[in-house]
Amino acid sequence: MQLNSTERVINTFEGKELDRLPVFDIIHNVDFIEHASGEKLTSSNAEDITCKAIRNTLDLVRHFRIPDFLDKRESEDEDGFKYRDEWWTKQVTYIPVKTLDEAKNMMLKDIERIYKAIDKKKFCFQALEQVNLFGEYFRDPEELNIAFERVAGKLGDTMMIAPETVPGLYTATHRFGFQWLIYVYHDYPDVFNQYYDALVDHELFKIDCFAPTRLSRVAMISEAVAFNSGLLWPLSFIKENVYPRIKKCIDRWKRYGYYVIYHSDGKKWEICQDIINMGADSINPFEPLATMDIKKFRQLYPCTVCGSMIDCQDLLAFGSPRQIREATLKAIEDSGGARTLIGSTSEIHPEIKLENALTMYETARNCLL
Image (cartoon, rainbow, N blue to C red; front, side):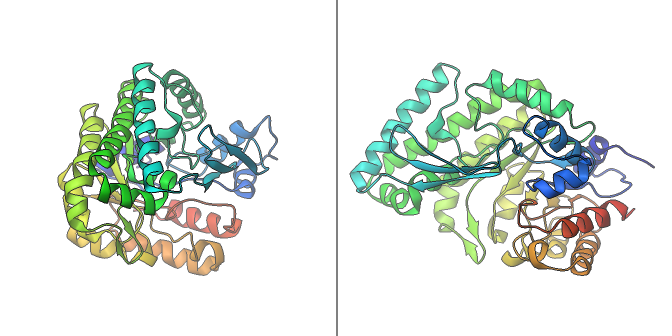
């Protein structure tokens, strides 16, 4: 049996027969893009050869950024937040909030801006993640949908996940830092909840504008709940504040018939069952450094898709091809050869050795079931 990439992905989510496990990742490595496409990168061909490299390598791709500029860029927004923008990532480098009242007032200002943008059918800059997700650099849904259709058309049978849904905590902690977010929650809980709801409403608006296009069949919801040694927040806070917002987003994607991947970095064993009960079709990623063991998950949840388990922090960056091959084969074996998306725990970032990335993908693609 020979499946194309789209068929392989759909069969994985539906538990149907496979020829091999699908390969799923993000490609943010110029050396890899040039090698996999067989072409030298220029500013004019960046989109075409990036799509070609993905088409030749992956069955399913998460958001990715086109390497149309290779320098580092600094910027500042109207509120004084400063950013460092690289072609493959972005970060907040300065938060102009010095007091609790300033944090509260900035959140109130953001809430107003978010709902004004939604009313105008526009995206709100302050409600976006600012890490270079696909969709952060478009002004409105029409612009995003046109770009998504163009890029998806260049990927052939490789499926691109719908523009990522980020219900709020990743966005809020990147914008305000954990300190001010926690202080506002403690001293001004009404403001915190209004802000969290506004971020979620912005994501629901994005879903409603994209989902009817049917340009993808798979959605991803990312929320910050864990780090390597455990949950970021008390479980009671997660159940009371985070679960209802995640459920809203899952339900909205499900309404349009999408398969949903729930993404959260870190050690998240305590919440897996609850997220699955909400309707998530997949849990992702499975970081070895966070003790997210594929074999244990498969035994506990045999009908749920698992994905992204080859460590990109240490193993892919500093390991040997032999170690990569062994880790990939072990992941395939531990997964039971079904309902699994093989790939790195985050992305093929610029520090990953070309040989290591090639070894992981070739091992996965050549391991027939």
